[in-house]
Length: 196
Ligand SMILES: C[S@@+](CC[C@H](N)C(=O)[O-])C[C@H]1O[C@@H](n2cnc3c(N)ncnc32)[C@H](O)[C@@H]1O
Image (cartoon, rainbow, N blue to C red; front, top):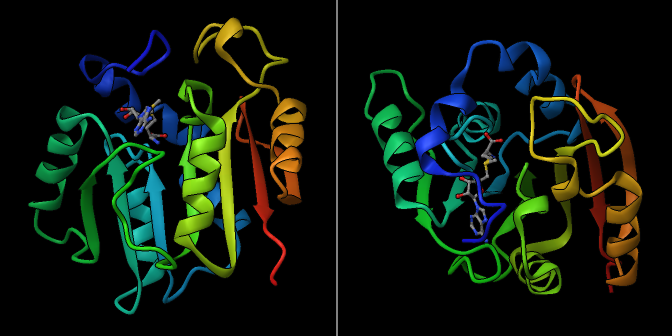
């Protein structure tokens, strides 16, 4: 935890119906590429705003591993999963982004929404993502635009611009295949590692 960590006491803000208008999960998922049958790790899942739609999108042959280090967030997601009709292919994992405890080579897509600007250990997290991804797997990072200075979202000083993130990924050996503004206040970057 640090001063940028989104507090579980504010979890209701992740669930506001308005959010579906300015950050529609379908619009974001359409850009992460086909996911049917895949295993996706949603790191920093919070209350599962993306993990639940992803679990429906991957279908019965796929799986979503919903990772967060705040028990309270995961408890909210657990309650949602107990509702009738909730997807059965979502696994809750209490873990830290740089040490998820997930098996190596287990994921086709690692997704992070509004997590990147909260991280302390970029290099450690990218190492962990590399460990988790199967050859040809993708990393998708959604975060707040730094060029829009009004709410909603974290203080501007906490935000990481799309260009800065692109550079960080490149320094760590990732190739950015996709970078664009999405929703009303966010950007999405998709990156891959060279397949050796
Ligand atoms: C702003 S919330 C976003 C939640 C969700 N991804 C969404 O878009 O609705 C960020 C989440 O990342 C989690 N988080 C922050 N740093 C983390 C870390 N180092 N490891 C695991 N989870 C982390 C927080 O607990 C919080 O639930």
